[in-house]
Image (cartoon, rainbow, N blue to C red; front, side, top):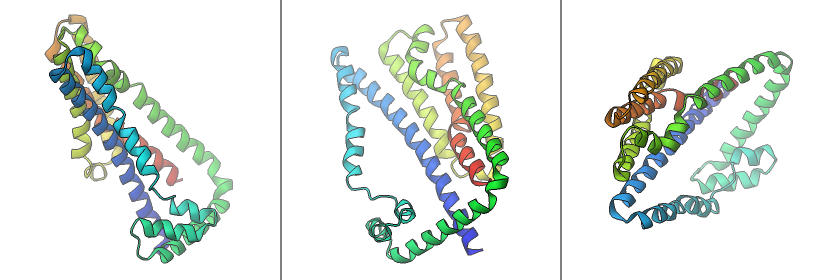
Amino acid sequence: MHHLATILITLCLCFAFLHQYDISINFGVALGYLVGYLCQATLSSNKAWRVMFYFGIIPPACVLLFLWFTPESPRWLVSVGLRVEAVAALKRIGDDAAAETVKVIDRELILMREAQLDNNAHRAKKDNEAIMTAALIGLMQQISGSEAILYYSSNFLKEAGMTSDLSQMLGELAIGVSKLLPSLVLFNYFDDFGRRTFLIGSAAGVTAVLVALMVVFIAGDQPIVTVVLLCLFMVFFSCGLGPITCKTSARLRSFH
């Protein structure tokens, strides 16, 4: 029972990390649009795009800097027999009982290897089903058009009749914020209502918005309606297809 509880806690931490990863992406998108809008509003067009590129240097530079101070994964160190290094890595991240934690990790890895050896003969078909399901969900996420909207939102807004660069930047900022907020608000409700429910609702909402966008594009010159629909698309996307896809993939694999 102790080992089962440990594994379940590890899975919960994994899912929480995946959600934080999705929030970080959405926050970066919104922050990028905000920087673009501020540069466009305060600088000349000749300088604005250069300053935007300069700001883009900051995040990877910070990541590169912090990587030098980031310890190796303790679990990986234990798996390759480097227990002393694993204890040191755990102490660096504030684990006062690092030696005991290494023993727990070691037992978990042994149990996982034994379970894998016992179940290898029966897992092939289930693994294939899990991989296929995860791949189809991921495919549905990518072909929904979310990346196209993020990359070409200014083109969409321009075609809809929004000719000012500043107004386009403001519309893009609204789209970025619409992508971020649902992830923050719904973080604690995915398990209450079920990931499947959110995934189905998200796919239905995205489909309805895409149909509405098609009608609006055919009608032409509807900038406000276009911005609202693009924001709604991101809201529905971030309610399910965005954050839940990677979580569902991890859960499918771990439960087999």
